[in-house]
Image: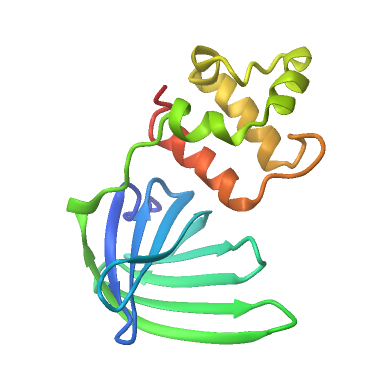
Amino acid sequence: MSDAFPGAGHKYLVDFQTSKVTLSFTSDTSLTYVVLNSDGSAGETATVVIKTENIAPDVYLVTWVESDNTTVVHIEDYGRNTIVANITSPPPNFGFNQFHGTFQPAEADAPAILTYSHDIRPLFRDMDITCMVPRGKHLDDPVWMCTPANAQRVFNAVSAHRMPPDAAWPPERVALFKQWMDQGLKP
C-alpha cells in the first residue's frame, strides 16, 4: 500500500447531499475548504493544517483542528470516491455530526498561487519585523523570505508559537504560510 497522499495538489467537489464543499489540497499538510452556498457561490472558507494517514489501500484518514477547536476527521476513499466527515464542536456548544458523501475532481478551479508580497508580507506587523531583525529573521526582505531554509525557520517559529513574541498566530495564518511554502515560495 502506498503512503503518498493522492489528494495533494488536487481540488475536489464534495457532495454531501444536503451541502457541497470544495477541498483544495495544496500538499499533504495543507487544505483550503470552501462551503458552497445553495446557489453555488462560495461561503465559509478556511485554510487549515492537516494530517494524513494511509489506513487501507486508497483510503486515507485526514484530520485537523480549526481555530475554534472544532475537530474534523475525514475518511477519504480515493478508489471509490467516497468520503465520511466527522465533526466535533467544542464546548459550550458541544456536538457531533457525521456526513457521508461522494467527491469528484474539480481541477479547473485550482487555488490561486500565493505570493510573499500579496499574501504573506501582510501577515507580519511592523513591530514583528523590527523585533525579528536582531534574531536574524528578515521578514520584510522577499529574497530572504523566499529562500527555502529561511522560510522553514520562520514557519518553525510561527507553528511552534515562538513568533510573534506577544501572541501566537491563529491556525489559519500558519496554514496559509505553509500553503505558500508548498506552492514554491513565490515572491
